[in-house]
Length: 48
Image 1 (cartoon, rainbow, N blue to C red):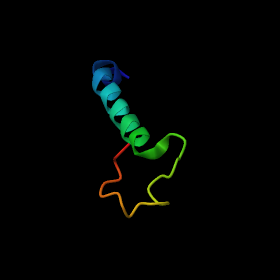
Image 2: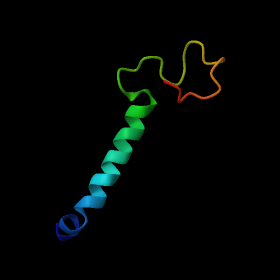
Image 3: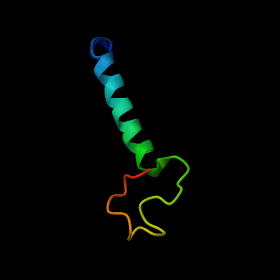
Image 4: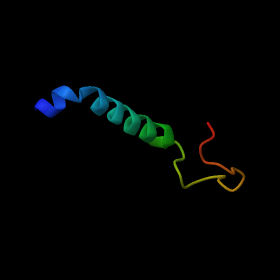
């Protein structure tokens, strides 16, 4: 627990990074996702 007390900031940054990565790629609600309708006209799946 001492390690966590000393490095809580980096742990928080890591959790936020992973969370934003997951939610930024269709993890919220699952509308379409990575496989589905009309993906052929999108060069990048990261457009919102």
